[in-house]
Length: 480
Ligand code: SIN
Image (cartoon, rainbow, N blue to C red; front, side, top):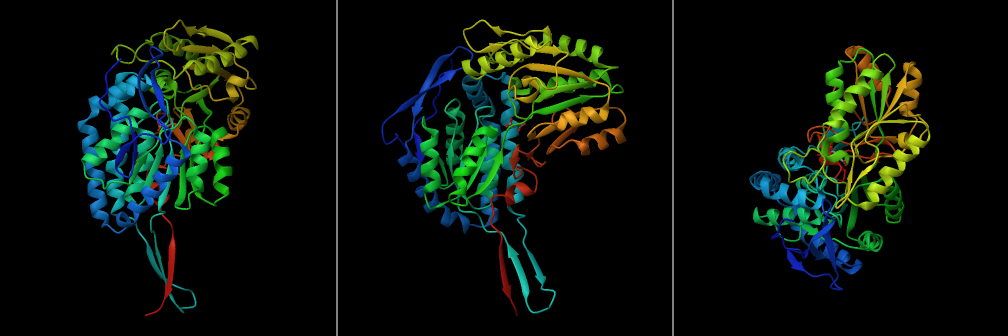
């Protein structure tokens, strides 16, 4: 356990306050199952108060020069970089991922501020003439207003900054519901933003133990204009229905079920290295994670053996131990879910080449696992595993394999390994996913559009388009 100096109150209108009912919720260290500290929990009334505070602060912020907003975002990048050790320590304490991954997350999270500092001064409009010549058409992009953000526990920093930086840059104010599992990193980012001069009230942070009622109150407040959510497709559907009541704009980053395809001509060492990244980065708890490995028959035995060897070399343990490369899962329920999928696959005939069971506690650990001869129809190939398990499905017919790869409601990420670049591009284009790693095991980059097709989401985060998601479009018809 690491002591934390983070102020654990709610952040509303620039003030640290207790929730209306004085409730506190415990934050656990998943490596031990023990509490680290507790934080204030907000009620629906607190959520609505936070939206009011955001609306009051947003009016002035929208009128500031883009350069002023940009400089604050740039300072936010710098301060996050300067506080890497501290932020990474918080991430390891409450999430459990290895320290090196946590530091990587801080760099990734900070970069959203730097990238969007640069985008903030480049929000473009347009001027045109109507085809009939009767008027000029001016198009510009004002901010949405108040944005409600609901963020997940798997990236306690980056899933906040990927939304927050463009939202602020475009001139919005926000209310964040951080996950109850990992709220400390969010609260510390809130403090760092105050330190770099972000005006009070623009960022409000209200954790809760009652997400449904909290969300209803935030959405029902007339000031709320947009919701940005990262989490499961199951929850995303519920939030979308709720947002429909007020016709709110939404950006949804939802679940994945990424196929990782290895052709016979792939370079084996780089395919295995990419597979380890795609599967295991951030303790295998990413929505971009490779969920199903399709290996062509000619390479499947070697790929399986080499992947099992690499998984066997993974050291599972407390993320503060610098030799550890896979931390705990987030909670006991995650272990049950992962284990249920593994047991189901083995019962249906899959072969556990390595691993296949939870690790004895304390803490919530699962053995790095490789399953061979998995059936495409098995639940483990259809559901998001969110754990260190690699199911391998051999294939002979590439067209049939591509149909299988696309046979899912999800379409977030896919990975293709082949040394034939033309084939790699052809196959990439046929995979119904928003992001493809072609001979690469990682796709995420603040400069690239992150998001999914099908039920993996709506909208994109990052890249040039990310900031426009937080903007309205207004057109002015005029003559002069
Ligand atoms: C996620 O798992 O939600 C995001 C993964 C990433 O940004 O790489």
